[in-house]
Length: 399
Image 1 (cartoon, rainbow, N blue to C red):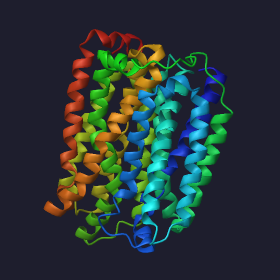
Image 2 (cartoon, rainbow, N blue to C red; image 1 turned 180 degrees about the vertical axis):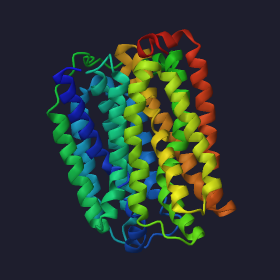
Image 3 (tube, rainbow, N blue to C red; image 1 turned 135 degrees about the vertical axis):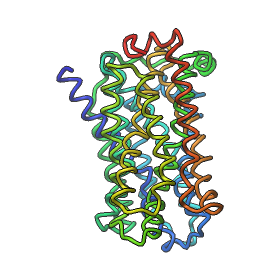
Image 4 (cartoon, rainbow, N blue to C red; image 1 turned 90 degrees about the vertical axis):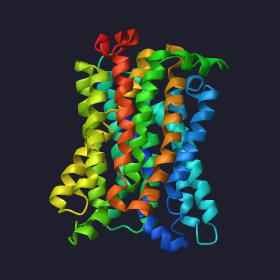
């Protein structure tokens, strides 16, 4: 890795980390917001769901408008990050009479993050061909730690206003860091708008199979991230033993995925993307099933299982993005990444809402095992891709 690549990797990853703190800025303080804004139990999940819905809407608009390919990636990232930080700060003005506005702001944040995340991936892929799996793994790891960071801020004792302010400041800092990064030697020049761009992406078999794997991964990921704190609290209550600071534990369980993403990316460059992505899904799916077995036990049993789950549940994510960059045509790379993320986040709406329905029907013990369905199907997609001609384009021919 050259010095220029090392610097780009650092600034892009930190920029992504700081901006993605906006994702769970409200969800991490949901109990406090429920009291401050007078939210009903049915409204609390929408603090996260509106971001997901906004992300899907923004990503679909971006994909069909070819936005990630016709607007320079760094410019798109920086402008969207600044606007998202402002929208997040707007939550400070909300009271019990304006909850609808709060959900609207969360929706806008999601739309703007749909410009941030894929454009960050595209900027990073412009800096790396060799070692791209590692580089994108670091970037997704930064996303993971950034998403978890509001839980850490909350665990440090800040009130909900402090968490909101801190996440907005971090997002502005992230925009500043990305602004100082130059374009990489493999950056694709801005393309002209073409209405057939999405159809070209969909016809690409390598992109399709990569996306099928990504959908299996996303079926599991955000439901686990969203509800982990509630699961730990319920397990602690069932055990009759304190687990300590649930917010801090949740940060480490989600945040350890950052290390998992980096390590999996390094392995995938050497051993093949389909093998590492499939293996990660096997382990994470097993942890989802195991959650029912360890629920209500000592934290010395529960927390290690959750840490393994946290490390592996996102370890495969960057590899699906890397597969898309390696199998898509250069001029459709940004659109392909955006469409993949749009479909994945659309699927998360099902599982995020599904978990509380399962809790109501069966209790927290049985809330997570159904998430294993995604990794099972995603692993099957990786097996098919590994045996296809498209595998020759992955990780220098390693599949």
